[in-house]
Amino acid sequence: MVEGKIFNKHRDEIKNYCTENNLSFVRLCKSPCCYDNEELIIQRNEPDPERAKLGLADNIPTPSTLEIYLEDGNLRFEQTDITRKYLGAEDWCAVAEDAGVCYSPVPG
Image (cartoon, rainbow, N blue to C red; front, side, top):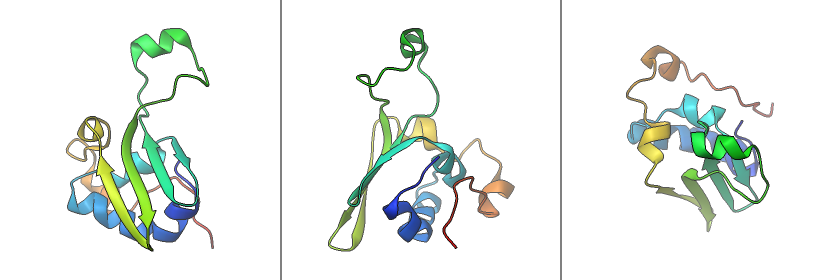
C-alpha cells in the first residue's frame, strides 16, 4: 500500500496526475512502494513468474512503475517502461476510479 510523506501531503495532486495520464489511482494505491521525504517510488504489484521462483529477497528490488520526486515544493513524475502495463486505467472499473477508491490510510 502506498504511504509516506509525499503521498499523504500531495495525494490530490498525484490523483490528478493519474487522471490526466489515464493511470489508475486505485492500482497506484494498492501497489507496494519505497519512499523518503523527497521521493516516492511506486513498484510493480504483479509478480514476475521468474522472480516468484526466487521468493522474496531483499537484494532483488521490485521494478518501479512510477517515480515521484519532490523538488522545490513541486512534484516531478517519471513514468517507466512498465508504467502503462501495471498502472494503466484502461481495464479498470471507471466507477471505482471516479469514486476515488483507495485503500491507503489517509491522515485525519
